[in-house]
Image (cartoon, rainbow, N blue to C red):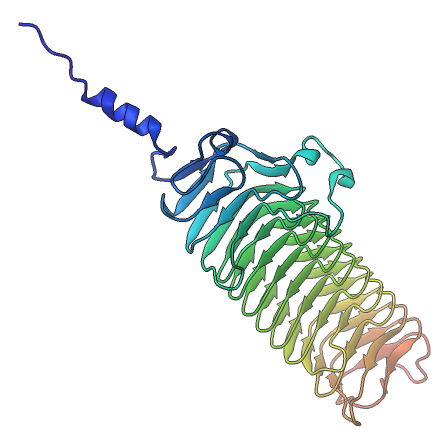
Length: 361
């Protein structure tokens, strides 16, 4: 008896090929071919940017580099919430930077509008995750995400503004931001920024606003502060070195602990005239003062050594200054402490211009 072939598997194969590229684990694929062809999935038209509106799914993965034609082109544009994008160790790159080994291909600040991955509304888009790859040579930002974003294990460099820009309540960890025109990493209230490296960016290495936790990062050779954080943030366990302004700059109610601030051009650590708790840090060989603190600050158990100005600068507001205790302050070029008062004991001052060592004023 003759057996009739079953055509159903072939029919299913054709339907699959006609639809979006879908990995076996349900993740949708993004690559140069589908971006410039008919679009990578439903909701995405042919050409740049690859647009994700959520209609095709929630999880996406690069399966090749995305090479963008100019500084005004976005790579991936997101118009919905709760999307995950795995760059899969591929690169989103501006055409001018393909093969480049120096910053010569980097767009000048303000000359481009394109970002590697961007949301349509920074303040009202929630839950975007981008991870595991490189974003290079964008006209604007490497990634520009919204609220509750997650950015992990990215290498962002040579972008025309900030390398990473994320909104309130975001988590930014394990990234390297190098030689971007703006800040290496910039985020807003209540965010966690940990285990990142920010090197030679034009602005601050890392900038976070109120109530953020900034820990275990390295910020070196940036054009602004190594790390800046505003009201109520905690800055701990970071290494900040060779930055062109301050190593760490914070404002009211911040806690700064167990950081190393080395050879920054101005102060190692400064809280200006605001209150802060500054403890167990090392600030040495900075261009001006080791630590500067203002009214109602508590400065304890720090080492301030061989700085170009004072070891510790006290800034008073209406006669009120910080208190300091159990600090070691030695061999600072101008002197140990300026501003007077607030010594509640246990401090040791040694070195130039100390009249009666080891007593601090």
